[in-house]
Image (tube, rainbow over all chains, first blue to last red; front, side, top):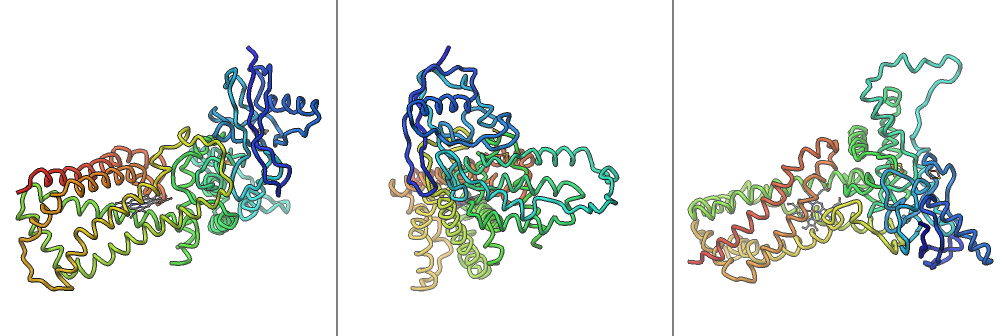
Length: 248
Length: 220
Ligand code: HEM
Ligand code: SF4
Ligand code: FES
């Protein structure tokens, strides 16, 4: 059953424009479409009417790049769980629904245009320590020569699945980036390769996070619920422990 | 100190530390008040000790005042910082989809507690300070029970106390677990605290409410 939808979409022509919600009607939306395909159809309709299409981010459209964002009906990536917006299907909506579509909101994620926000704050945090230094001069050590427990490997892998989408920030009432930074710190804190730079990593990444203007964590747990990769709050607690260790 | 408090995680841990201190104090305060239901003598004796022991008066009392002030000032600082981290609000936001009301409204439950603390100071603390250090009235070690019962004569005051403790329960329903998590306890361990958290967060405020109502309805 195809659906007729009312869309309320944030339109903003550029970073310095005021921006406002604009209403659109879209007919014959297939429940098998993805949310982004629905927006593609809307843009075709807008173009046919001579308007400016809605700008939104996307790349892989299979849930691995983290580019697609969108705050849909009051939730990051919409009403479904454990998915990105490109994995959200229109069957989650009903004929006649009104759907609010807004950009991820945080002072540290300024709007570039319409629904596209600048998430390079995350890149700058990563530059402060989201890496390990490895000798690549030709006599690199075999990684398998370092024994790592299955448990630590699993937890590090879970932390490493963070795709840097920013849904945690968008969802948090404080626009806190602690789930993201917690995941990036944990990924290395759990492995022997990460120990050498552990102390500088957590101190520098947290300092950059604060500098970018993200808020503080109140442990509401909203980030964990909305994270497409199920990154656990444990990672924030681990970051706090790492930060503690690094400062005493 | 200022170095620690200049980082987000430092502030979070300091917030939790002050909260732990307040929760410990509350338990102690509750234990003493509870005796007033069973024995006027025991209540008088404990109150006299707390009110006149120099270690309590000049050691613990200033620490307590610092702890309370630190907690609510830091609460306001965090609230302002967190609000400013999202300069443009969502038109539609569905907070209930992913978090509890109590966790999103710590500042409001906190403000209600602060209003209560002001009332409580006017009711008990200022008269005490006046009695002991300003007008320096003679100390009667049996005066405390009567003063307590007299305060709960007024239905308005009793009602205000009951309402304040309801807000305290809301604050603690999120705060108890949150303080452990802020201090770095893993979510799995914190989840095991669920029952203890509920017992403390509901039990202590309900206990205080029972004490207030008991004295209100047992005027003599
Ligand atoms: C005096 C008025 C009070 C105010 C204005 C206040 C305010 C706040 C605020 C805003 C938070 C959230 C901090 C954050 O974002 O992480 C908080 C946390 C907390 N408060 Fe209060 N509060 C007050 C009194 C109390 C009292 C009397 C207690 C306990 C007896 C208490 C226990 C807690 C606990 C356990 C937390 C959680 C700490 C954490 O998340 O690490 N508060 N308070
Ligand atoms: S922690 Fe989750 S929500 Fe946050 S950036 Fe990583 S994948 Fe996205
Ligand atoms: S477009 Fe890559 S995750 Fe959605």
